[in-house]
Image (cartoon, rainbow, N blue to C red; front, side):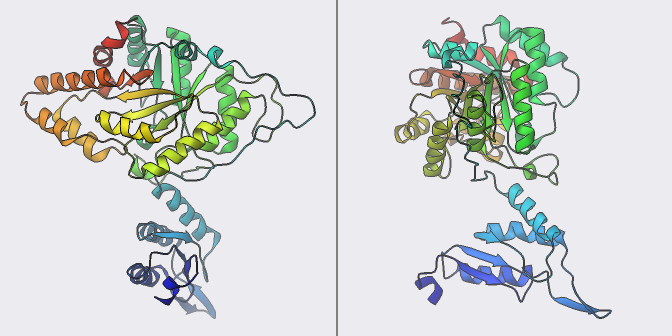
Length: 423
């Protein structure tokens, strides 16, 4: 209690006990103080064996307690007696998987390394057909296509041809959505470009690759003709198919936008010349229903300052919430593309409401879907709801990004008719 009243910035617990007793102390302190906590437990109690003091807590055990410490509000962690590099590595990996958004970025400034000036970047409106259309003041339509879990691209190719025939501007390709293992978005993007001649918006996450791998991928993507990138931090493996997979997160989406902006100015992450600059049209994600809107607005500002040119929102089911968020946020020159998700059933609506982070589905929509007994009527209601969302956002956004649940691309086209028919 005295520490809580003191000028101390952080309250720390160190040594003497292992993770379990230290967690008990943390819970007691949390009841009387709101100051940030730092913990450094021992690797359990030592056991005297063959003339040596052996600490018995394994790195895996530390990993489990790392997640529990985070849940109790601990903000700094380490290890004391008996801990090894393996203990710390397991703690770090658990921390990366536990946090849905890693709040750090590497500030890679755009500075010449010689007196010779950097090459002129590609003009914004010339980066891609999508960029050209947005800069011309026209509404755009994107449709999401999730990469397959196999090497069979028959359905993606058929879907891409259908979307192109109906005038869709670009296909939005997620990168391992919800931490799932699928064909790389880069591979699918290049296949669609080469075989269907339709532009793509390639999602690129910070979860699976270190900084070197990211730069290599981006240079390769540029060489293969990819022009539109959506820079996102990425879902932690903990929520996906393989929760024990290692999360990297060398940087977050802000740092990734910095990196892309460097490449667009002809230099790499180490400020070395790369020759001709890349010409990526760089977008970012936005969650208008964030539980911490101030932080979301702050991060959006940092993304804009780093070089973001357009924003795609999470699926919109509550237009008033989006408008309220935009009143507080400074969009600057960034284009806004609203995410639209056509609900296909009551079960789909309940799943979106309760199990998809960043998506807010009002109770009124759940009740509307529940009013219909058959799947056909529920689907019809879902399409009508999505079309109503499109009509309401078109007055203040520059485009829409329509999801195609379960690969139902005709459904996405039907939802986007108001924009596609206006061309």
